[in-house]
Image 1 (cartoon, rainbow, N blue to C red):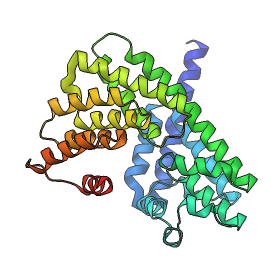
Image 2: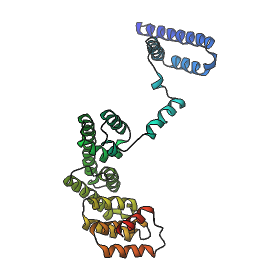
Image 3: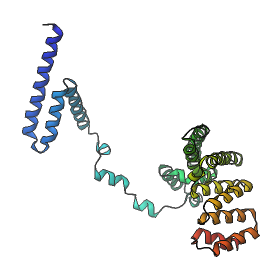
Length: 302
């Protein structure tokens, strides 16, 4: 019999002894977790050396953490832990003010605290507010704002370029890539934190992508996608392209409120009073229900 075979048999026997000892000792000491103990013992039997070594290391780490008093509560996954994370600080929520209002505060400590709360939250929806903090008299607050904006915009530009290149590739997924690009860009574009030149360039990418979808499969274009592009084109004052997409929206979704509101926004922005009232009257005589945003637009223009 070879030496290797002898060593292998010895390891198997030792492994079985370790697993058996573990099973006996833990079954007597902890009868409430019998199923868990049996599963671990079976793993040790089926995975010689590796199984006992794994559970041995796990026990060692647990003992070390316990000995040094390390708090493991932050890495325990249970319902109470999830609720503690999900439940907001009610005192903070009650006292929350907009960042724009906070910039008028002379107390630098409170301003910095609010700025950190914004950054630690869903700051991507507050980028325009963070941009306004660049001009804060408090240099630390301005530094926070500049750092966040730089990171977000660098990531945005990189991903836009990557998604744009994907949208140019011919294939079955090209339409999906184009729509994905528009969906990704719009939340940042709507906050108008880019320079006018870059905003216009990004709007062109969105328009170019949707043109591809229109030519390949216009049925994939939802009224919401039309709205996103039209609003972006309005923000860069590209009224000619906006008119083209408003016409396409009206043709594809004639009974959708967005077909009317986007035209009214266009004529409102362009100062075209006659066409604004023409569309308003068409909406008035239709069966489409008017929402608060459209009603406010009409009141403002009036």
